[in-house]
Length: 229
Image (tube, rainbow, N blue to C red; front, side, top):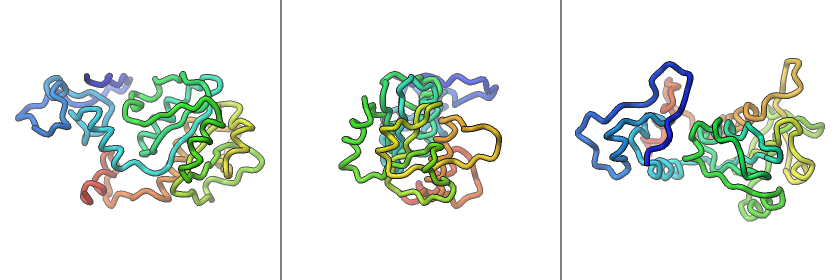
């Protein structure tokens, strides 16, 4: 079944129409999408592919960092965090607390991203214990050091708190260290969805293979990995 179409106020046409033929015979392609067009929120490389094929291809190249977000009050930013995690190739998104979250901000990327729910901080720690991952809190607290000066472990979990209260006391006790994003204006804090993207991109700058091309398009990073296959 084709994925839902991304709704957008952008006037540009998203995706492609029916495949002009001859149709590819690769089993990764979806006959329904080939026949009717593909308007999903995916990069061009994945046009007309089955959802399962896209997930399998992503699984082969996901980065070893995870993202965790506390959700005690039904945080509306989780969709943005999931979308960021998909964009930066996070291994898994862990949601701690309430199971329900607003998927609108994810723009359907949750269909391609591994997401795991944990009812409590203790439950998260139980799952993390055998995985040898460093828990990195992202929050503005007295003990935090600047994220910009930090060297992030390759295998880590970037942990974000609820919008407003930030990391819970239990989570602050659980993480190995806390970093804060340096700010230069009058606001006390930035949106947790924005903070998640900054933190993930900090990991990308330190550990991800960078494109050796001047292109900055959505598929630019694919140009590097594809040549190595």
